[in-house]
Amino acid sequence: MKNWIAEKFLRHEIWALRWSNKLPIFALFFTGTLWIWGLLPVLLLAPIFLILIDKVPLVFVLIGFPIGLAALFFITPWFFRWYFVAVGLMFGNQRLANRKQLDVEKRLQDLR
Image (tube, rainbow, N blue to C red; front, side):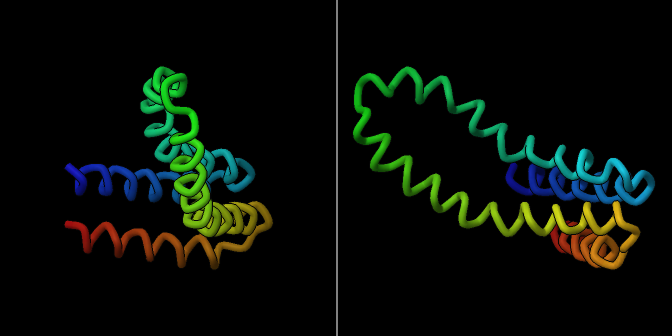
């Protein structure tokens, strides 16, 4: 199951890169569609957290804050890498996008 999800995510990254290369002015929009992969688990778990928060609010603060901080630690470099790829395409620099596309295609090939 995990390989299927990783493959779909990598295919989405390639889709975002290809469309960003075709329409560089919308590169931020195409790379912004990658956020659905990060928001989907949050949206699926939010109702459970909202139901349980009345029962043990301190536990959610003590557990949720470190988990959120760790997530930010890993998400921030990923976000800014994609941001610089998109902005580079918008200003006509395809070097970062080409390097990123080769990297994503290599990871997809390794996954198979």
